[in-house]
Amino acid sequence: AQKITQTQPGMFVQEKEAVTLDCTYDTSDQSYGLFWYKQPSSGEMIFLIYQGSYDEQNATEGRYSLNFQKARKSANLVISASQLGDSAMYFCAMSGLIQGAQKLVFGQGTRLTINP
Amino acid sequence: DTGVSQNPRHKITKRGQNVTFRCDPISEHNRLYWYRQTLGQGPEFLTYFQNEAQLEKSRLLSDRFSAERPKGSFSTLEIQRTEQGDSAMYLCASSLWKGTRNTIYFGEGSWLTVV
Image (tube, rainbow over all chains, first blue to last red; front, side, top):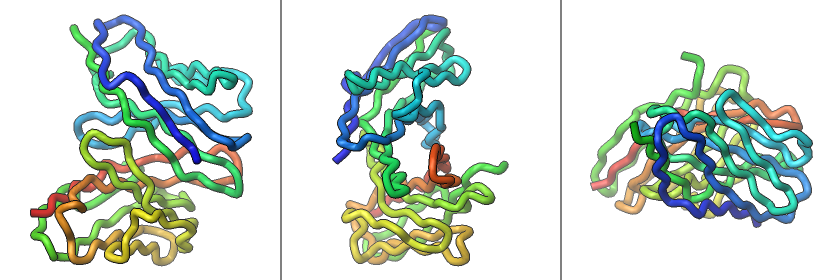
């Protein structure tokens, strides 16, 4: 079974600072994907970034980067130069890739608050 | 707007009534998923379709829940004889499965309140 653990229920960061959101995972699959989603108060889950288990480079998407440490089973999200609009819930999720399985398993989430 | 569309966005219903949610996926996406999210929790998988075929259902999906995706386009999720425990946000997502990397995009969700 797959499991995602996000140990930070809430984080408070000053605007323009970088922030790291922690995510550790557990799986027996050799091939899997790791995702980060942002959920504002409106409810929509916004895709941020993806990392495949066989990707050698850490994924980057604009201000978002994923610090993938396979041996430690961690997939931390780094947001550079935080903005007020980054305040939201952030979810780490993973999926298996065996036999076409793409069911996402989510963590509990981290509520990020950016202070002006 | 070419994203995943869900309606209604909000639904308040009395216990025992039936409700139906609709999801329109991103055009050409062959996979469609339903998730449920309760307050303070991450989304939980309910079911998914590849084209019109329902390939997997979670044990969370009791007999009162049914999902369809006729013709492999939009999907409906019906909850019969609603209970207060069904109050949650129901999220729909879609993806284009090509056998490798497969990014899943979510809609804005449908909030259900059972009173």
